Image (cartoon, rainbow, N blue to C red; front, side):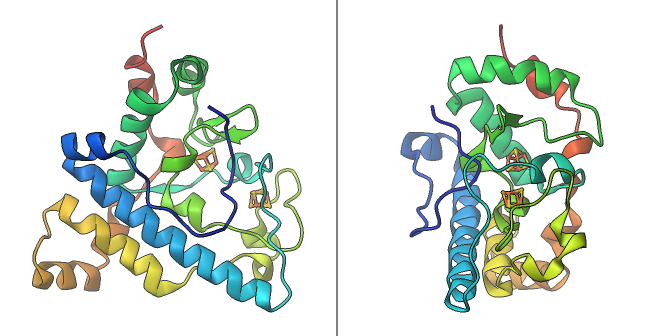
Length: 209
Ligand code: SF4
Ligand code: SF4
């Protein structure tokens, strides 16, 4: 499979793994969340482009995956990464990823960055989907959020919230009332962990040689 850092921002597509979705009902919540987030990002980018900005992010551009060392990840996303790496990722890629997962240390580059590209691109977390920079490619080690906030896309809150809302059934919030209360209390945001602080050796252990 060809690896990509960022999708070209055309019309976002919901991920399609119908048999997997039937077998794992939680997967649909993740797909919905990512679809809603991607739609919001595409819309926000279009708005900026109409104002003359040009998206700097492109395939093969990945210094952000090394310089950002506290990427938030939610429980459903963690499960999604386990699923993707264990079941969908081509075996050859998975085997090359294994030592990175085994040797990953907190504070380092994202362990899913392989050959300068995201090896889990379809299931990359919301934080990665939302982080987009305009006009100038980030310098090695630069975190544009701190060096030039004005060039960093601000995600559309309505779409960001819609993505969080899509995750709520996974946490047992199924009625409209429950979901409304959970959103008011930022329930999903409170579940965040730091991707780089997770012990990815557990995932590596699931990968046979
Ligand atoms: S955020 Fe910066 S480093 Fe990452 S893809 Fe965009 S321009 Fe490249
Ligand atoms: S999951 Fe890792 S490699 Fe993929 S886009 Fe996010 S930071 Fe980069």
